[in-house]
Structures are given as structure tokens and as C-alpha cells.
Image 1 (cartoon, rainbow, N blue to C red):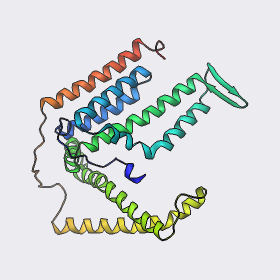
Image 2: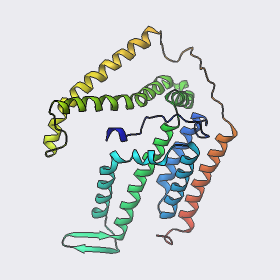
Image 3: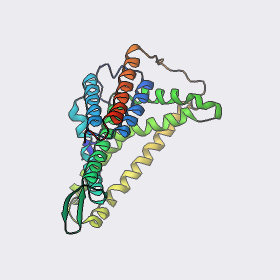
Image 4: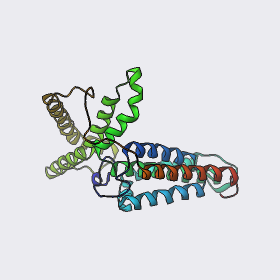
Length: 272
């Protein structure tokens, strides 16, 4: 399961999406999240799916890699679907059995909320898969730089977020190694009820936390030995520049949002 988590991983290939300005990709990711929350029908979600497939095709990232990242969240998606299905009231009754009442409104809300989680995870995963941690850090810092007038620590925040994303794959690999070592010593992480599994995770969590703190100490010592003092007086090897492809990508996403809005206005109540 740990190998299925794609958040924080970078897929190093050459593509149009990889060459986009990281600042623009962050803006596109935010706009895509807005578009996901604005969709309230099958037509809107079909438009989102078409955009996601198009972006995945242009990035040369295998679509199965995005689907692979959804596997660890399948239980959350299933629970979200069931909670909305059984506990959402409505007027159009579909199923009535004992104390179970399933309404059409509940079914549609359960389906749309589940799809919303899928698109949110897939969209953010595509951002990290096509943007290196260094470029992502530069993009976040540049976008937050106007807040320096109120003494907002833009560089420090960007550095923390980048380090967190960078070490997600490292911690997952470390967790996998510790888990295999504990299983070789007879530990069982899969059988038993919830309490038994929780207790079985203690031999895994303790060495993982120790390793994480040791790695953080080594990183801090390495940064101090290189005289790191934040973003003051620092220059960048690569200067960020927007190109026509960046503005074209922004135009396509704005067009997608406009189509979703128009669909919600003119086809509300007509399609599903």
C-alpha cells in the first residue's frame, strides 16, 4: 500500500506540463480545485475528467500512476459514499428496506462527493508529479513574496512545505523497510481487529519517529554547516519566466470553469 502513494513524488520526464512555470502550475492547481467544488452535475464532472485526461496526456505521466495514488484512499472514498448515501434525506425515494431509506438526492450527493475526492487527489498528485521540489519551492516563495510587506515568512514557509513534500517518499520507503524488518521478526500487521492492529503498529511507529527526528537533525546540521540563514540575500540559479504555454494553459482552465458555470446556470435540473 505504501508504494501506491504518489503524493510528493516527482516523475522526471520531458513534457509541456513539466516545462510550465511552477507559479502558473500552482495557480492552475488552485483553479482546478475551485472548478471541482463548482461542479454539481455529471456534465461538470465529465468536463473535469476530460481536462484531467488531457493534462495527463500532455505531461507524459501514465494515467495509471494517478489511479495508483487513489488506492490508499479507497476506504475513505467508500466511507464518504456510504455516509452520504444512507444519511442524506430527500424527496425521491429509491429504496426502502427496514430502517434503510435511500433517496435519489442522497445517491447523487454520495456519488458527487466521492468523485470530488478522486479529482482533488488526482489533480494535486499531477502537480507534484510534474514539478520538482526545488521548482515548487521557488514558485510558492514567489507567489507569497508580496506578503513580505507585513513581515510574512514566505521563504521559510515555502522551504518547510518543500521539505515536507520531498521527504514523503523517503519516509514511505523507511516505513516499508521497518515494516518488512518487523514482519521478519514475527510481527503481524494485518490480522486481528482494529485494537489489535493498532497495538501491532507500535513496533513500527517508534523506530519510524526516531528515524524521522534523526533525519531532521542531520538536515538542520547540514543547512547550518552551509551557513543557511533563510532567504535574505539569496539568488536563484534558474529565473522563473512565464511563456505563452503558461497563459494558454490558464486560458484553457478558465474556459473549463466558464463551461461549468454556464452548465450550472442553463442546464440546472435538466441533466441529472
